[in-house]
Length: 119
Image 1 (cartoon, rainbow, N blue to C red):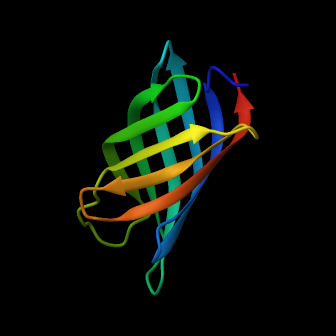
Image 2: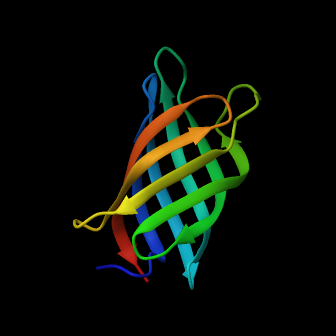
């Protein structure tokens, strides 16, 4: 069982009217996590764009929780307000982090992160 999630993870999320696909990189010290989640957001009927969120949170060996602290929109045609996300989940027996996400704009999703490379 993984106790330290420092490294790179694939990231996939479905939030009903669209999907996110990308990766996450975390650094863990004790139970504290910091890192970045970078993904392409595809919303039905709209041009895909890339998002980078700096995140901070905790992982205690089972429960995972990170919240965006800063967001940058990449390859984006127009500027708009992007709400920071919170991702909460658990590390399952397949060493995947699975759970749900939400923002302050009543947008809810489900996500899966899989290990690409641990450090």
